[in-house]
Every structure is written in structure tokens, then in C-alpha cells.
Image (tube, rainbow, N blue to C red; front, side, top):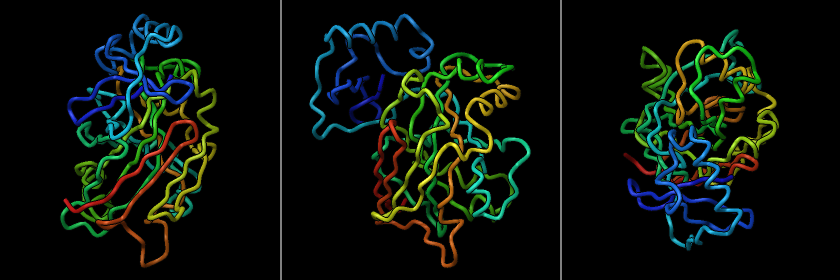
Amino acid sequence: MKLLRVGTAGSERPALLDAEGTLRDLSGVVTDIDGALLADDAALGRIRSAAAAGELPALDAAGLRVGPPLARIGKVVCIGLNYHDHARETGAEPPAEPVIFFKAADTVVGPNDTVLVPRGSEKTDWEVELAVVIGRTARYLESDAEALGHVAGYAVAHDVSEREFQIERGGTWDKGKNCETFNPLGPWLVTADEVPDPQALSLKLWVNGELKQDGTTAEQIFPVAEVVRYVSQFMTLYPGDVINTGTPAGVALGRPEPKPYLRAGDVVELEIAGLGRQRQDLKNA
């Protein structure tokens, strides 16, 4: 299933995109798309049954904002330097173990919402990423199969980053990762049954129409299953938690000087095969 949330910010309603591309209203079946829903097999079954029976009313998508596909996110766990090609372009050694940092849940916005360039920023960068959404409480997972069994679905994430704040201002990476609007998510939460191999997905990103990133999850140093298993050794993952799994080569940081960092007025578009497409206009904060 392709689950999403539509409407004005803070007042989104749950919806489903059916196989014919028609937007369907889920508000008569479930109250929202969140961790509680993803952990409830009976509720997910009701959605599938209603969709199969043709019982879901159509919505007019014209002019309808698409919000983040997940409400009440608990935490956003991020994996740094998780693509071989990205490590090479930045001159970094591939890590021996996954690099973990966090984004606050309030950085998450809709896939087509405005992204704000922080005040004083000179090095705002783009990063297309595969997001993993957790569907079952996970702690101390032991195998790849067990890890994938705890995944509810996948989505497109844009891990917007301010490189000066991240790298040059001391402390952890978090200062460059948690600026307002720095995690567009969606448009859809695609359930795991529709993604048979998360290591066979193409990722692309354009800036002002120019292709900047053109990668594949096959390049991940730590595959999705290993990431979920590994993270569960250090923290409990709950339904509705999100893991951003890293970005392929092609970011501004890896380019020759002068590096083409983002500015107000730029337009970023990104997509992952089967998971949908995003588009953001950049404005000054």
C-alpha cells in the first residue's frame, strides 16, 4: 500500500494512493497514519479490505497539500557515510560501524513544503535518502531477517544539511542537521510488502533541473537490515520511528570549489524508484 496524509499542516487526513493512481480517503477507516496504526495488523487489514472492496471515497488531489506520510514520529535516527561512493567523494574512510546521529522529529515537513535556508548559512547541502519506518518494537535484534520483519515500510527523505554548522562549528553533527524544515519526508509511506529488495532502489536528486545525485541503495556500506539490527543494539526502536539510511555520491560537499551550495530561490527535486518524488522551493529563514 501507498499511505499518505493530505491537507493543511497540522490538519492532515489519512489517505491511500490506489493502483490506478487515484487518491482515496482513509478517514472513515482510521484516524491517522502513525506508529499505533503501523503496529496494528487488524487496522492495516481493514484498510486493505476497504481498498479491495472499492469502499474508499476518492479525493480530488488538485491543489491538495501532501504532508509527511507519518504523524507523531518518535525519533529520526540517521546513518552517516553509508555509501561507498559518497565516502570516496568526500575523502572519508568507510566507517567500520554505522555512524549514528539524530534529527529532531520537528524537522520533518511535507515532501513539497518550502525548505528554509538558515540565517547565516553559506553551506546548505542536499542529500536524497531512503527512509525506513519501524512497525514493531525492536530491541536487540539478532538477524537480518528479524530486522526486516520489524520494518513497516519505506519513504523518500531529504536529509538537508548545513555543512559549516555540521563540520566547522565544533561539537556533534547535530547543529547542521536540525535546522527548521531540514527533513522533507514522503510523499508516501510504501508498505514493506511492495519493496521486496531495499538494496535495489535507485535514488536521484536534481537542483534547478540539473541532475546532481544518481545512485543506488546497492552502494550502501551497511544494508537496511544491518542498519536496523545494529541500531537496535543501542536503543529501542518503536513503531513510528524513522531511520534515514544515508546518501549516495553527488552532494555539494563532494564537489570541486566553488562548491554549489543551495541558496534561496533554488528548486530541489528528488525521487526514489517506487517511493515517489519530492519538490522543494528554497527560501531564507
